[in-house]
Length: 120
Image (cartoon, rainbow, N blue to C red; front, side, top):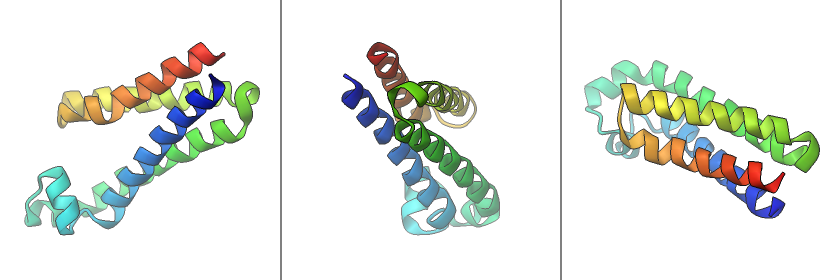
């Protein structure tokens, strides 16, 4: 069960690395604008904010990877903390920006959190 929960945590970390790349490097490009439904003008005006947001997603990914690397005992608390951060950020994003964030970010985080708790 620990392998499954670690795989789920790695999956959430990979999602956040993808968000980092989209927000830091593709925000103003066609892929980023299409993904987030942005106009060229808005993307250009908000690219610094998006890069900052992408950096935070990178920190979430790093924390989750750290939790997996630390192993099932030492990494348990790290995984709990960073998965809770992912879920809270997803709920906040869904409430303030786009409801889709609940399904793309918070739900995978919640599933991984449940698997980590069950594997304990």
